[in-house]
Length: 312
Length: 114
Length: 148
Ligand code: SF4
Ligand code: SF4
Ligand code: SF4
Image (cartoon, rainbow over all chains, first blue to last red; front, side, top):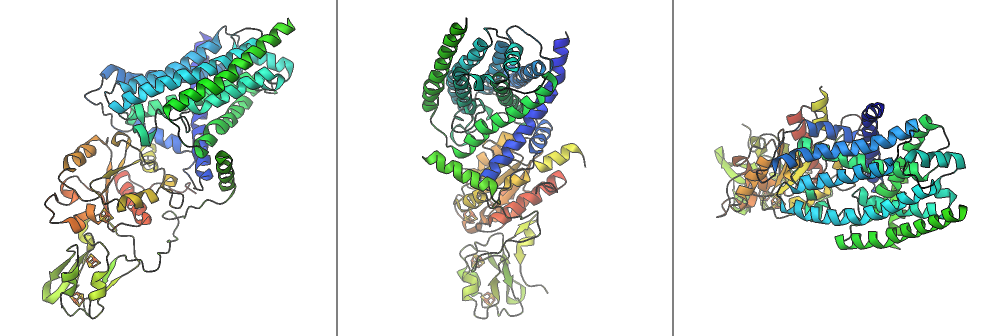
């Protein structure tokens, strides 16, 4: 019961931080392109404006799905992010929370896509088919690298024990061993796909599929999908920071440091590639994700298994 | 590699000053290039009413006004400058004023003011 | 100044509707998004679908083929919305008045809030037009004091 309350209470914090990240992202991106860019509070203005706008539901849409999928998607993403945050603050041992977070974040992306595709717009359908293949191809190496961290922590699937292990060892999983470093690398290679930025933004590319599954969403629906996307990409960065990087502090303070680390990871893997790289084809995204990060992740998994076996 | 070049450029831009001009938030107005053809200035007292501008105007932006004067509709003009070129007394000029924003189309009429 | 109207004025998303323009105005509009003019400073984002737009920027003369599309696009922009007619063609028809396919100036078809004359107008003029439209429709100009 306390866990539910704590998760509900930290959801606004996660939302706030991910909006701040989005502001930083847009500002940095603009500055890297030589522009002044929007004010830091721009994502907040955007959200308030979108919530205050009219709702338009196309008559081709499957109404319940189209209407409620954004809400479900946003709640899934918020729950996933808030769960990571709660564990970071309290150090609570929850068996299998790694998989739960992973599941929540994946369903968030999936729900947004399915909701958009239920509008009946052909572009949204193209985007759904692209999105599904991309989702499958980058979630696999991501999951493998999460498993590597879990194996490092002695085979538990609880985030708190991974954090406890790092605190004990006095170093992050990524800095302690080759396997951990490779796992972080694989995870970070998948981040542009998670954040839907170039080079992997084939699902929502404006100039290719006209915003993809977002094409029929506007107003409050769009605001919810934006929340879902922003929160899930920041939560993924937060997950990476808490799994692989060492935070030299006790739990409550560690959460703050971890948020900062997540911010840095997100800037490195979402903002920078999104600015300097161009978009590739959907098939190239799938091929890249299934070759580079996946082989690195499998390698790291094998190395960790060997190391774990050697230790025993 | 290309990525290296892009990264270097992005970093350089990030550390340097933005290229953006302050307009319209700052009062400074960007200079127009030389020879820019903008808002029409019509000196109706000099105009002799020969109607040459009306004849050459390719978009029909010139219309006849009272007492053998003409009226220019800037909202219809394509700023080709032919009227200014043909006017025998130099009564039409295309100024460098570019901010032709209006909420009412009647604001675009440039004609004689009696 | 309410928080809602303030946010509306600070995040006017643009949708560009090309009603048979010669592309001169389109180019100048895209220049307004470039680093030198950077409308994102005012919170503007170019969106690809009218459902997400707040400001409808229409360029080009209204031709018979495009007439139903213009009306439909206008109707698909959720309220509250503003319309900016950019270029002499959109303002009055420009050189196309009298063409067999010409269907009258834009304001006969949809309500226009602000006109920007020019063929094509300079990007600065387009930005000024968007600024005026937002100020008229949403109560204040975009990108107030903290737009640095
Ligand atoms: S500048 Fe060209 S289009 Fe404009 S009034 Fe003169 S002749 Fe006509
Ligand atoms: S060409 Fe010059 S003088 Fe003749 S009507 Fe036009 S403005 Fe007047
Ligand atoms: S106003 Fe001029 S540039 Fe713009 S669409 Fe018309 S002819 Fe082209």
